Every structure is written in structure tokens, then in C-alpha cells.
Image (cartoon, rainbow, N blue to C red; front, side, top):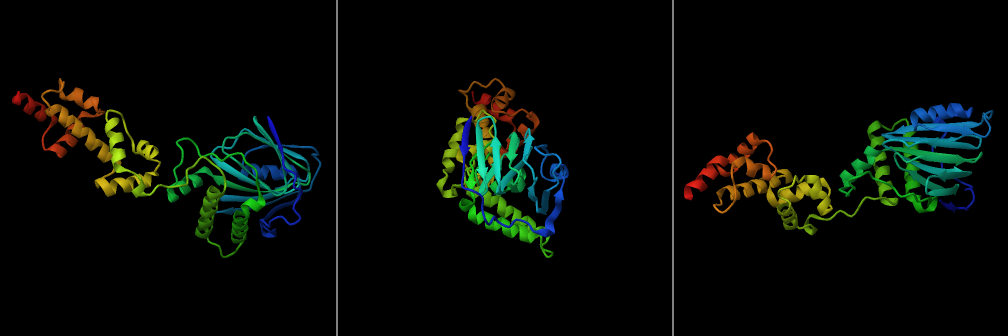
Length: 333
């Protein structure tokens, strides 16, 4: 296990995230705060050095699909969880110290540092008695939507942020944005639609400022060779090729892939792949030199498992049934 210690000291003026309007608990029992956090922020277990303390505090607001939570337990507290499914947590240490431990790393983070915890990552956090933190809870669907909207190339497996601690000054524009979001969430005139727009902006901002396994540089349609994709299809014509396979091969979002095929083939990737397979079947059935015992064998060889639909596609494409093509070849012999 690696140990990292970041000793910059507490901030004299931490960012103002949420004000009195959002207060849920003040001078409360930590277990009460923990129960509320379990319900609204994420399931966890709380272990305290002083169970008799009654100086915990918590503020909470919903902002679109995000949860904003500022809290302190008023005692040295250890928070453990096996991992939260489909939820990302961004933790801003405002005061005191936070110690994070997992199987490979141990991080000591004073005030002024930020840590992002991925879904299903085991959580083991120890907070000092004077620690206060601000948490942003983000459903994984928000990051997926951001990738789709910006046409970023996400991996096949889950989007994952690197376990890197950031200093507040490195994320200055993000902190300003979150401060504004808190103000809007507490405003009497903010609509749900406005807050949802803000939550999308925050999610996209996190993607552009933090390190993760998403490729943000979206290739332009001009930089992607359509001919290269056609060759890939032809080289793998007997396999079950999907649009997702093509997008990964070309490092394109699905939206960009569909635009590319619309521009060059005037059809969807699925229709184009099916057309190329049908052309191969037609060529085989019409070729006297080809070893084609029957239509079914050729159709199955190119991945057409539903023979009824295969015949319909074939006739609509070539104006004859596949059996008629095979018969025409035999007649020529």
C-alpha cells in the first residue's frame, strides 16, 4: 500500500456551499445525520470515537439529478461502505483532515483537497473531529448522457475516474460553478428545468477537468475514413458485427457513426452491414465455382439465422428469392 500525505494546512476561507436555508441538522447526534445521509446520499456504516457527541451538522439540497450535501460529524468518524452502485461521489474537504484507504492506496487529505469515488469502489474514510466536507452525488447516467451529448468516446466497461487528489486551486472554475449551483438550488425562483441544466453543466465540467478513461477528443467526420470501416466490415463479414463494434473500432460515438453512414451510404450501419452480407450471399449463390450446397447453408454462413426474414431482405434487394438465384446458376451450368 502506498501512503500519500498532502499537508497544505486548513483553508481560512473555504468555499461557501449551501447556506442556512439548506440546514437539516445543527448540533445534532451524529447517528441522526448518518441516517439521513444513508437515505439521501449513499448507504454507509458510521463508527465514532465519541458516541455521546451532539455537535453534528448537515445541509442538503437537490439540484436536478444531483445531491448537494455539506456535513460534519463533530467527532472523529470512520465511514465504511462496500461501494455504491451507479453513484459517483465528489468530496471537497473544507476543514480538518480526511484519510482515505483502499487495497492499494492510503491518502491523507487536509482541507483544500478534492477526491472522487467511483461506483462500487469500497469506501473507507476517516474524518478528524473538526472535519467538514461538501459532497456532490452524481448518478452514473449523468456521465453517460454527457458522453453522448458531447460525442465523447466512452469505454465498453464503466466510466472510471482516476484516484487522484486535486487541490481547490486546480479546480477553481468548477468550485465557482458549484457555488453558483448551490445559490440557484436555494433560490425561490429556480425551476426544476433550470437546475437540471445546471446539473448537466457540472457533470460535463467534471469530465473536462478530472482524469478518467474517456476519450474527449471526438474525431471529425472528415478525419474518419468510411472506406476503412467498409474494409473492416468486409474482413469480418461472417461475424455478427454491431454498430457498437464499429464505433469502438473507429473511436466514434454512436451518434457520429450514424452521421457518417448517413452521409456516405444513406442508410444506418445495421442496414449497411446487412446489405454487404446479402451481396456476399448473392455472389456465392450466383457463382458457378462456389461451393454452395443449398441456400440455408450459405445464409447461415453469413449470420442469417431467421431464414424467413432473410428471404424477404434478399428479394427486396435483388428482385428474386435466394432459391431462384441458386436455380439460375444451376441452369447456366
